[in-house]
Amino acid sequence: MRAPTVTGYLHRLSADVVAAVIPTSARLKILLCALWLVSGPLLAEPQKTGEQRGDDFTVRARYLQEQDARLSPEEAISALQRDLFNADSRAVPSFGIGARPVWIYLPLSNTSPTQKSVNLAVGKPWIDQLNVYLVRGDRVVRRWSTDGSGDESGDGAAQAAPGIGYLFPLTLASGRSGILIRASSAEPLVLDVALLSDDALAQRKQQSHYGHGLLYGFLLAFVCGNAMLCYGLRERSNGLYSLYLFGYIALSFIYSGHSNMWPDNPFIQRYGLSLALVLFCSAGFLFACRFLHLDTYAASTQRWGIGIASGAVLLVFTGAAADVQWFSVWAAFLFAAVFIVGVVYLGLLSGRHGERAGRYFLGAALCSVVGLAVTLSAFCGLLPLNTLTFHAVEIGLVLEATLFSLAVARRVRSQEEACRAAEQLSRTDALTGLLNRRAFDDDAASIWSTAVRHNRPLSVIMLDIDRFKAVNDRLGHPAGDRVLVQISRLLASCSREGDKVGRWGGEEFVVLLPETSVAQARRFAERLRRAVSASKIAAAGTSISLSISLGAAERGRHRSLSQLICDADKKLCEAKRRGRNCVVSTGPREATA
Ligand SMILES: Nc1nc2c(ncn2[C@@H]2O[C@H](COP(=O)(O)OP(=O)(O)OP(=O)(O)O)[C@@H](O)[C@H]2O)c(=O)[nH]1
Image (cartoon, protein in one colour):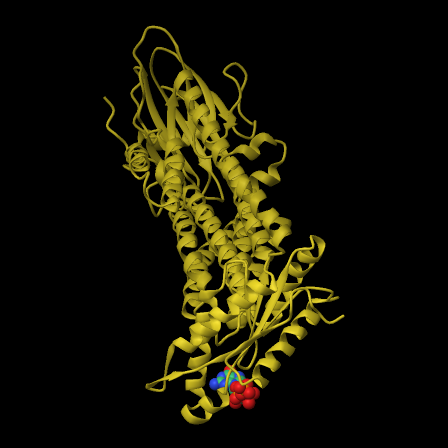
């Protein structure tokens, strides 16, 4: 039975947790689902150099790094016989960026009496050159190379397999033989070697296709979603994020070997990785500046950052134009390191300046920069390269894209809430919380036209607190305010749901009563008057008794709502003249022309 791998354990664990968290928040569920999805394609065990699966070859690889001059295969065999090759205990040896070419020797033993076919998988698809020699005794009997300079007839040519590396089809005669490989690359020299049966190779290819299909599909959905948000919301940061993710897809396309679909284009092989890396990081940097509104509080940092990003792009392109591959590679990888540190710094900086988006940004960006740092370190030989470290950047980006979408959704929601709150505020009287005059006019206009269209009764009550000036003078303005608030509450609590109660100005209020005749309005006004007279209003440490005067009018031959309100106001004045604390109304259907 195979021992469980870390990724297999993660996959099962996250699936269990997803199943168990049905009642928890949707956000957590989305995150766990994402973890489950990305851990799925990683179930393949890490390749181990020298491990042979399921047949009788015995392999133990040894390595020799060229020092000065290029060794011929014969010189390499001689060095092997002089025991100059060393074993490497790492599962996947990695010699870093710009390393001297490395020779690998794999002793093979075919104990069966017949010859055997097997696929040799070497390195990563970005390795610039591989030469493979089949050795028997101290003689090279076959040779292959990625640049077609070998003797490919018979056993077939070397081919790049996306997500796997370079494949060399071997036919091994019975007995002992060996494989010598020379690998050179300006980019990170990662040399995993495996011997795969046809079935194992087909399985790996299938895993790679499904894994990359899932990853690219997931990220492309985010690319399109953000492009649409950029267009729809006119928010440039979404466009830059879309570009950043697209940059990563291009980068992954190149380093996983899918770009070898164009084998006749050596430029992509030599410079594709550096160009895609620098474009991906630059887009990420521009996105960070825009998303964090850096121009408002750290304009000089933003200028520096954009300067560094432009400089890096320029250096990598200059290296490519002058065909100095090592220069482009170093510039791109150095800029990637600056990007990793820079993005974290920008997140912290924005948090210090109270930028709310900074918190989400930092959380999301940490996922991708940690992933990118782990993968780049593994490529450069600073960390062991295995399935998890190889795919760390992909896992990080998938998590980041998910978190960033949640952050965008939250931002849109809080903008909507702020809009609604501002609209509500603009309609409300600040002191009493009733409709202000503008909001009352807006609401009343549609009620008026409905009543006119369907010829339905509609009444208005205007009311005013009696001798309110005396309250202010005696108890002070704040006490007067408290009185206004309490009378407003009383009005709101006495009115029906469809009624519109507004503060007309000062200590004067208006109530619009749809589907209400003047007789009904009058009864309602009386009820209000009695309620105010009966209540003791607490203000300035004492309780005071107040009264109100009211005027009511019903829609009749009025040509506009303001005429109706004017009629009600006239009746209010009449109530004041009659000695206050009373209701005066128009007669049924009586109105000014
Ligand atoms: N505390 C307070 N007072 C206000 C506010 N708006 C208007 N007033 C006061 O309300 C008082 C209205 O006084 P008047 O128009 O003379 O009316 P009155 O004293 O109520 O007398 P009558 O209406 O004739 O019964 C003035 O003293 C205004 O300063 C407010 O928002 N808060």
